[in-house]
Image (cartoon, rainbow, N blue to C red; front, side, top):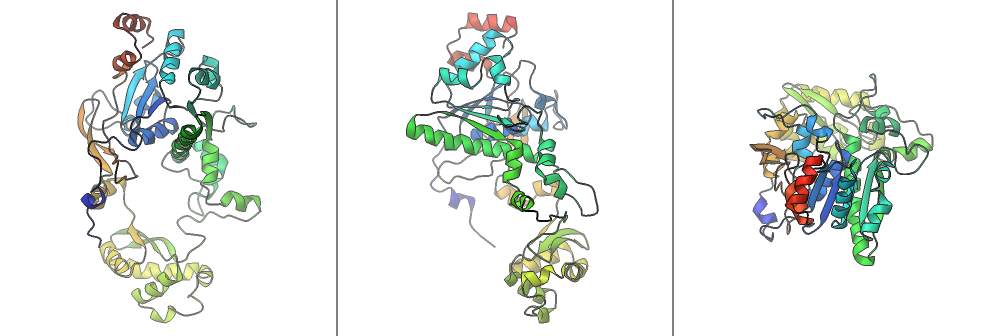
Length: 412
């Protein structure tokens, strides 16, 4: 077991640093999950992310389930994906709101939006207007089907991208119906690609002074992350639904122990040799009928019975101990509640207690990437609607009299 400590990794960390994107400003005009996820990553990396919402708030604020004990209720979506951001309310249906948005964009490095293609242009704050305000601006547009193409004007949501990409056809048990991902997979991947593309575009801007419009589609993101299956599909290769089994390995599946289920298996031939000894069948380690991946793929059912039978007679802890001793892959099939209690999840700071809209110590999911020199963290909980409006308008030079007039008109 590794004895490496967190303090060893962060021994050269810069104290009180916000992250590697400190000093970068992002204006986020988004709703629901894909766009907010893009902004979330940039905010976690240290950028000053200003989330612009209608004064009534966006749909994520009203999406259940709500965090236990919060009154007024705080949505799980709001609490997790909008941390480390500031909140500004603007009614973009009002000319004054649009003018303020353009002024804000002129102070930004990146604008992120995930409205239906053409929406921002229809409001007079599209790419042509934004680049006129700042020529080196990066605009990241996230949509269901992209900014061009015959389906670009279609309404696009996460489950539709999962369906259209082919993902749904392979997800689920072989004998069952197609099953969507239980997480917002298409939104998450589009958000990840949007953030990565923003960083690439900023790098280009820093070298050339050129801004650009970045187009990220949920469908494209699902297709890119299809493990090469789009290529196989294009070439007519049959892709049956396999549930928890793997096309490239056997035995590999979920199996029942006496007190729960585990995911276990072998991915390389060296693992098989060790597994054969662990389960008491050393004679199969070098048997030509089992020793290679190609041979084992022909014996899936037999190998599932062999490994499944051995695991059924043992507890998850016994199986885990035996497999770990030999370096063979195995882990418990856990609920999210069980994962939240895992000491290693704590070691990795994947739950960080922060105040969210006045509610102390909400365990918010922490950043995945760790930076030894510029550490990232959940610096602030998701803000209440419009919590930073006055401060941001002050930064734009809007005096109190003008702010009062904007509030009276319902613009902010």
